[in-house]
Image (cartoon, rainbow, N blue to C red; front, side, top):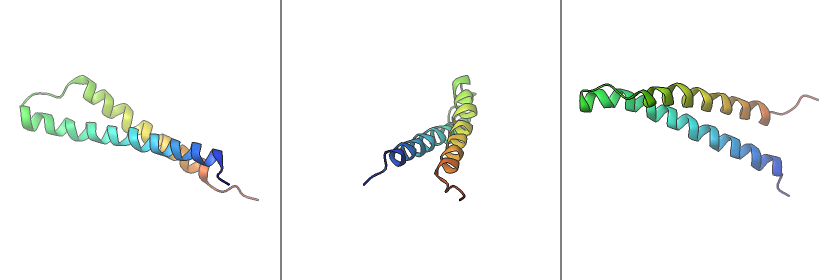
Amino acid sequence: MPDPTRSHRNTLLRIALGIFAVGLAAIVAIFLVPAITHEQPPLWLYLTAMLAAPLGFVLALVFALMSGRRAR
């Protein structure tokens, strides 16, 4: 029988990985925008990189701690 809390935890991991991927894409875009357009990247790109990557990483850590086995 499937455990409903396990499904909730898997959802947390998927959300964490998605947010982290958005942060990494923003970091890559920060380097690509000046190389392609010879202009500075917009402020929202910096803010997305600063918030999304660490938030996704922290959520992944929370998932790892929640999914660990408890000591007896």
